[in-house]
Image 1: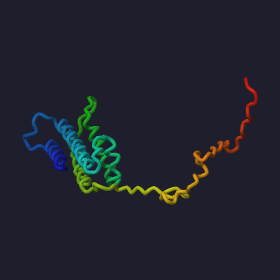
Image 2 (image 1 turned 60 degrees about the vertical axis):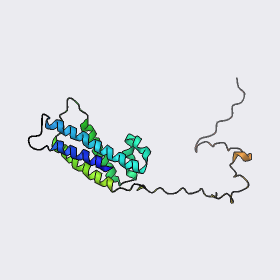
Image 3 (image 1 turned 180 degrees about the vertical axis):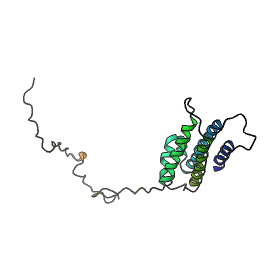
Image 4 (image 1 turned 30 degrees about the horizontal axis):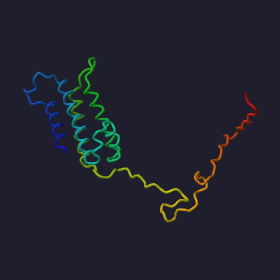
Amino acid sequence: MTDNARELVSDAEALLQPPAGTAGPLSPGVRARAAAMLLRLALDQRLDDFWHGVAPAMTRNAKHRMLCLEAYTDRGTARRWRLTWSALSGVCHHRVPELPPMPAEIQARLLEVNALLDALDGAPTATPAVVIPAPVPPTGRTTTLAATPAVPPAGDLRAGHSVPKPCPPPGRRVAPPVVGGP
């Protein structure tokens, strides 16, 4: 599954460092922006592959895929993933008054993407890293059917009990009842 993401990274690297004489008509800034798009696509592809193995429904959630990543990896990896993806996303959007990205900047992002792909390859695919404690039953109640009381609890409305009226907050008096009326 990761082969596609690795191919995208190697294609981005070929754009950033073309062999001598093969640069073609593209300027370094245009090649850097194209490489950034390939790197962001590699991150998206690897994240889709990861969630497909863990929870296939997560592949349909765009932003939530990165937010939930922290539960399955360490906090640093999830944070680096979001920061790198956001930085690449900002570079991918062409704005007229901005200069194109520098190839050295995208080369640094390429190294970060490689590190993130390696980190996600070693992440577990079945159990989350965050342990959620099991719910504790409320005190005074049991969880087995045989031990349930025959008489409903005192606050149960089905037993004919009324709901107590709320008290005023401390320091406030209750207004006297209105007598008469229009």
